[in-house]
Amino acid sequence: MSILLAGGAGYIGSHTAVAMIDAGFDVVIADNLYNSNAAVNDRIEEITGTRPKFYECDIRDKAFVDRIFGENEIETVIHFAGLKAVGESVTMPLQYYRNNLDTTLTLLEEMEKNNVKNFVFSSSATVYGEESPYPYRETMKKGSCSNPYGWTKSMIEQILTDAAAANRDLSVVLLRYFNPIGAHESGLIGEDPMGIPNNLMPFISQVAVGKRDHLTVFGGDYDTPDGTCRRDYLHVMDLAEGHVKAAEYAASHSGTEIFNLGTGTPYSVLEIISAFERNSGVRIPYEIGERRDGDLPEFWADAAKAEQELGWRAKRGIDEMCRDSWNWQSKNPMGYRG
Ligand code: NAD
Ligand code: UFG
Image 1: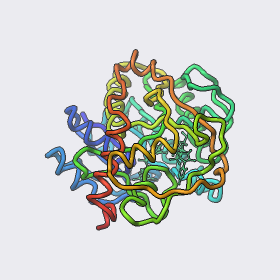
Image 2 (image 1 turned 120 degrees about the vertical axis):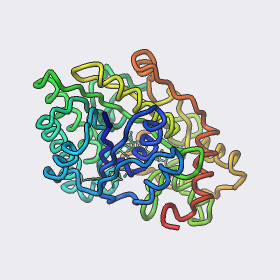
Image 3 (image 1 turned 135 degrees about the horizontal axis):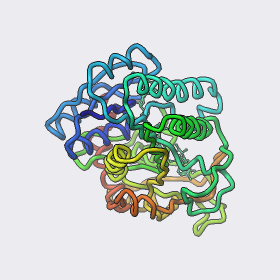
């Protein structure tokens, strides 16, 4: 039996492929390479000694997805395939709704047709919305999102919940990620954003490697301990290992279950800069700028449910996260392109 990683060539999917192979699963990746590079599969093979079967395809293409299910004994689908830039989603909402919702619907329809029962979804802490008190718990009501990207996650959660309520054979696990950073310890795979990075760690890494001259800290006057925003950063390999547990859980349960995947500990932007400097030996020039629209001052996970029910807990700390981000970026200054 195999696991299908839809969008598996991307940042989180490629790390999950490594964790899945390490755990003994057969991995099939399907990705249109919109935001990733085919070289990822060579790197996964270099790390694990196993080359995942790879399909270059759009997950919205029903006939192609049908073919993948026909050619492989897929037990579980993990759905990473989505557009994910928050700011871009505000200017291109239709593309975000079309891509993120259609990929999900196509997978669900083809799974039903091909009798595939387990679905694990890459959701986000963003579904807790702007009103929820932190730490965020899975039992809280979802809130209103500040951008179309967040709404796609919230809507897809609803679609999956409704599909599992109507089809008792379907098992759905919704994983609400907090802020993944870091890279595989080999430095062979990592986050490789196109253009100017939106997220903090890739931006810091690109400053460190000399691609950008300084970081702008978005706001220094928040009501937080040092005035900068705090987030629950977690190592991408911990997150990847969470998917192994989630896939095992999905295969032995039915209905819909939600899990936060975070550490439960927040760090501020200034703390991340100083941890990065400590672990790389490189100084990060920065200036405090304006607040970024839509940013919440702080939030973090209550990570107890994942520990109790999945047996998963983040093991790697902030130093490993920064060390591994730097290891990847310094060994691959141009990402997979150079
Ligand atoms: P990523 O962009 O690196 O990976 C997504 C992959 O999906 C890419 O390889 C892209 O080419 C592929 N893809 C997109 N649309 C596709 C389509 N129609 N058909 C086939 N492939 C398609 O992003 P990531 O950081 O690895 O995130 C994976 C998932 O986790 C996304 O759904 C994202 O929204 C979610 N998520 C990410 C974060 C984060 O901070 N990185 C946080 C919360 C949730
Ligand atoms: N930040 C800066 N400067 C930068 C980039 C980011 O100061 O150049 C700050 C942000 O203001 C924020 C923190 O660094 O306080 C983290 O920002 P990221 O963009 O890395 O992450 P976010 O918390 O904004 O967003 C992440 C995911 C989204 C998800 C959201 C909520 O990228 O997919 O968490 O879960 F929707």
